[in-house]
Image (tube, rainbow, N blue to C red):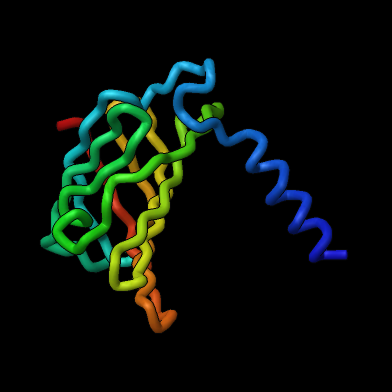
Length: 131
């Protein structure tokens, strides 16, 4: 029963996700953000900074591009908390990154997960502000 509920929840959540350019105004389009990573528990600020861009229906990370992660599409949905979005990128080494964020006005926060080709993964939190 739990598996059926999880499958139904996943299916419904994809119905709410809107790829850019589908008749709904995209509040992320044309924005650029200065971002800082934090460890998953939030205690350790990391020195890595990044620039996130949403342009032409494509998400990019300046730091990710340095590791071979090419810009890719993203999906978003608007809710009472703000605009939630998600994007998954891959590189030629078989690694992937998954970005999940929420924009609330001029602030953004979310999670970033890097998965290596061998299946190991590390998740970080991030906070961003308009650049």
